[in-house]
Length: 504
Image (cartoon, rainbow, N blue to C red):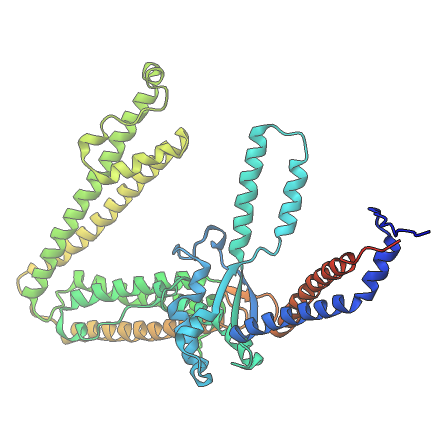
């Protein structure tokens, strides 16, 4: 009896058999995984060769001057952290640090330097405002908190910045890179102070003393010049005495401080220049009496014009004050206008000074506004009285020079005038030199390790890109390995499933 073989179809998957077949194909998985690992590593190495790793040196700068929170230098100039990496600063650092010796061009150096804001207390600010926002608040309160958060974060960011210098490996030694990063804010501070006067150092520099004037002009003119020059030096000394650093400094050549110089100039004015000024009312001291009279006549004309101007301004303020008070007391005008009315007569005066003065009313209360007008009126009247005193002195001098026989002077009178002029000139020039040396000493002090503009929050830090590149190599190779494992499993699965059917 013959038996016919039958083919048995079975759609069920035998998992044991499948895993057995996969295990037999394990070499495929391993080879494909190694291939993926190799391809990933090679791809990164090609990228690494095209863009070699960099070394980065960075330092955090804290700005310590008043006004930085408002983006302003102490003298009112606008401030930006980009000032630290301006072309002038980086050019000076490039030259002073001899960076060209490392075969790095100026353009490459400028491109390698960057600066970013850095708010060190950002997390604290965020945590504080998050706790406030978690409370039950209205929409208006939430908007106000968000606005305050943005404003406070911006103010904090203005106080700190991070300077970074990133260059290829081995281009410059790491220690030299740290020196360069430290030199950038130092150069910015020096240039800002010396060239731009952000600390008002330029404003306290004395003017040059015109020694030729002592030989070519009348004694009257010389006396007036010396008096004005002394007043300018006293103003400078007043600024130095109000400065925390300058008032403690001593001029090594003379042994004077700003305070002792001010006292010395006070003596020069009291016992020499004032004596010289009164001398012209007692005697017609002059090199040429006609030239002296011409000078006095011109001074009288100028003083009288100044007196008229001061009186006119005082009258304008008084009239505006009276109109303001009258309008303020009118209830009907207040109700009609709905606010404090502006003086109706201010336009007809055509005086820019009055317009500026009346604009104060928008910012001050009524009482302060009226008091400011009264104070300004008193100031103008006192100025007028001072000018009147000058006019009286000039008139007495002019009368003395106009007397008959006034050209006949004793030798003693002329010698005394010349002695006072010579002594006062010597003391003024000595004070000028001492002031200049004190200002220069102050400038050198504030550019020390603790600058008045900035401070470093620690030593510069250097980070190498090599380790990050190694990590990236491992990452790329790992991704290739994982991809190879999945691809190898897929191929092994395909090979394990594709098989011949069994015969029963």
